[in-house]
Amino acid sequence: MADVLPYRPRTGEIPTDPGVYRFRDAEGRVLYVGKAKNLRQRLSNYFAPLRTLHERTRRMVTTAASVEWTVVPTDVDSLQLEYMWIKEFDPPFNVRYKDDKSYPFMAVTLGDEAPRVIVTRNRRIPGARYFGPYPKVWAVHETIDLMVKAFPIRTCSDSSYKRAMQTGRPCFPGQIGKCGGPCSMTVTIEEHRAMVDDFVAFMAGGDERFTRELTKRMLAASAAMDYEAAARYRDKLSAIEAVLGKSALVLAADEDADLFGIAEDELAAAVQHFVIRGGRVRGVRATTIEKEIDITTGELVDQVLQHAYGDAQDVPRRILVPTLPDDAAELEEWLRERRGRKVEIAVAQRGQRADLMRTATINAQQALIRHKTRRTSDYVARTQALTDLQEALGLEEAPLRIECFDISHLGGTNVVASMVVFEDGLPRKDQYRSFNIPETTDDTDSMYQVLRRRLAHLDRPEAEDAQETDAELEGAPRRKPRFAYPPQLLLVDGGQPQVEAAARALQDAGHTEIAVCGIAKRLEEIWLPGDDFPVILPRTSEALYLLQRLRDEAHRFAITHQRKRRRSDITTVLAEVPGLGAARIKVLLKHFGSVTALRAAEPGQIEEVQGIGPVLAQSIHAHLSTR
Image 1 (cartoon, rainbow, N blue to C red):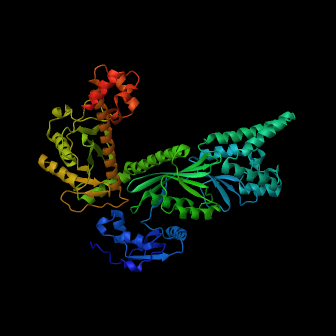
Image 2 (cartoon, rainbow, N blue to C red; image 1 turned 180 degrees about the vertical axis):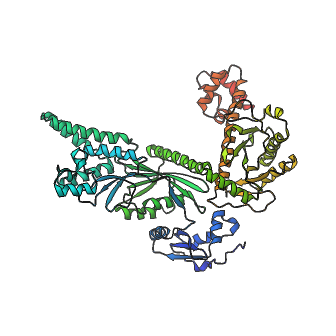
Image 3 (spheres, helix red, strand yellow; image 1 turned 60 degrees about the vertical axis):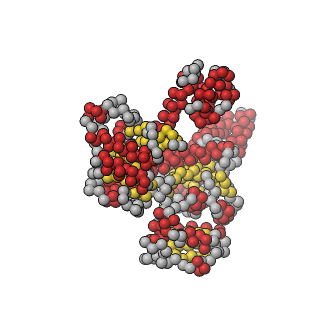
């Protein structure tokens, strides 16, 4: 592969102005659209030596056959043009969005003569005002049922409304008290419009003035002994309080904001969008993003905000994000034009905003795990993944049993290894193993040792194998099952050095019939022994998702085992101190929170722990200092 792309323009030809650029393939299809404050500086990054580019970026620039750009007056103009072109051309190498589901909204059809409130998934109703999205349809209906008690607006269909207005007979929902529009023959169109305005104002901000006003009217009616009116006000007040009670107050009562929690890995990201109005979470939307080229978190936030507000009718005054994009000022200006007023983009750093950001991020992390798990748990996807692996690695048969190994240590100490097993693309947790490695020189030596120990099981009799005490199981019976069933594929966490160590272990054990490969985390490359270049699986490949899942599971299992060992080690060491029993050890570890903090503590700090006197504190400090 040539290191210089044939379509690369001369550096002097590229302007230094802000603008938008497009990469096209040989057929003229737009592959990627991007913006830049300085086109020359930004495009130069794409035409760096190919070996220095991220693999997905390298794939994009080598797929392209030309690049073109358009200069614009300001950075805000470049943002607007980028958004328009992404919407128009749908470039395959820009990030791709996929909602986890089609969320229901509450909509008020303000464009109608007598607006009505409905539940819908259609975001294109002319003149409608939307609230949500809601996680469940029943949650929208429940909210509407409560709201129409306080603000009785129209709920009937357009045909029922038209028929009622023509005949002068109330619509059926109006007859049973479920519709308060003009079609119920209880209010005029003007009076109904005023009630709709109150409905929208309340939903937009949970305006507490309604609560105060209804309370005032209820007390006044009660004082005047108009108990029927007081009861009506009481019922409306109860409905409003029920709606407010269903959405917890998470920020200040006057806070209108959108908060975005993001979790990402090399190939995908999950976004949790919390809609906060009047200090309360009014809706949540989950989105999964598939990355096509290497982008930073700031660039990802930029794309998320463009996607969220490109066609939005409701832009809040504050947007909270985990990381500020480089063009935050331009994004604020772009959003201000849509809102008509100032918009602030900020990072949630402390207090309630930071707490809510942590909640959103946790939800995003779980959504990302679900997204990756869903692809590997689906039967069709699993079959495709195993078939793709067979073809990509040149195997004679699909690897129905795959074992993945990972090495974990803490600064070179407490070296452990994990082995996880997937059969038919699904985890077999009863056959997971973890290994302790007493002495080793580096990760490759650790990998060699562990694989030799594992491969030795293939040649042992069943009775001897059943008594093996080297490994530990996760959630399995005490008696370990026979472990002589050979894998079709060994996967190691690492690149070329780890793969070569694994191949050497297979060679020395006499089991060269077992295939081996490694997955390098930075670029998600697949390495085979003896090859100078990695295998690059397509970003959307089911096989890549399966290998990632194996690698992540092996890493999780190794870390879990290492933490158990560290906890066990420090407990054993402390138990050697005279006068220090199990109860005091537990109190010590709970007080300091970690082994590192306890080892670093001075005798005076240890003495502060309940039940630890000066002499015992000195003994503990001296004992840990010698270990």
